[in-house]
Amino acid sequence: AGRAKRPRGGGRQLEAGMRGILITCNMNERKCVGEAYSLLGEYGDLLYGPEQFSDHEERLSGSEREEDEDDVEAALKKEVGQIRASTEQKLRRFQSVESGANNVVFIRTRGIEPENLVHHILKDMHATKKKKTRVILRMLPISGTCKAFMEDMKKYTETFFEPWFKAPNKGTFQIVYKARNNSHMSREEVIKELAGIVGSLNPENKVDLNNPQYTIVVEIIKNVCCLSVVRDYVLFRKYNLQEVVKSNKEETQQNPSNLTEEQNSKVVKPEAEEEEKSSREVKQENK
Image (cartoon, rainbow, N blue to C red):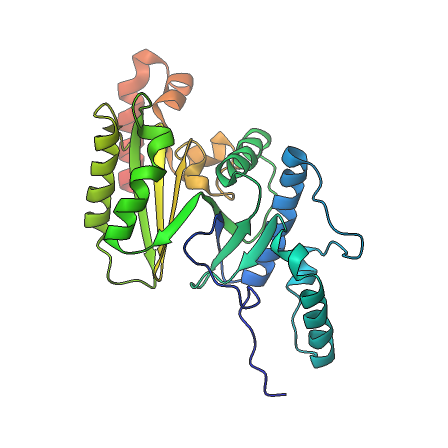
């Protein structure tokens, strides 16, 4: 009767060595987990085929897995079921774990490439403009994790960055940094050190803050550093599922000064570019 309510991940915690998908939401983490299971399951089946389960294990939906455990008898039955199928659970394609931060959900992945799956989801949503989630905001693939200390991060990223930046590979890049429930890391120091490592792998790697080929995502939660290198970060609206489905007209109406160079070339005649630019600046000032 005195059992404390368990964390959202059922006691599993985000830790160094995990791979998965970091998802931000607006207040409703339980619904976010359900949406994540549904969305990832849909596209996971398309890309990798249906997930295989043992004969005695039923495939539970995300909402059923995370169902509230106020009923003690139901909780005990669920506990027995979890123990009985512990091996199968460990091998599940998607499994939520406790992230360690409010409004952040972490879905651990098995046997897939998180960056390829998330890029495919965003590419499809960007093309179709079909909204598929309500509470999920951003969905960031996490290809690697390490301890959130500078020496650990430097040692880890020297190898982690190689597929994208080690000669003969090269590309333009930017680094985006976010820390939650962590006060001992310096944003400026992290960006400087990681940029230096990318440069050391190939001097032809150059910083581009406007439209880089690659965006290095650094998400620190408590003492865990989550890393990924993603494509189309600007095109896919910082991997925001709510923004990526908006039409170009909606984006223009909401923020006319945020059109990319490519969009400008399509919607503004060359001889009228300066006049249109001035008009947008005046409207922005008036706002």
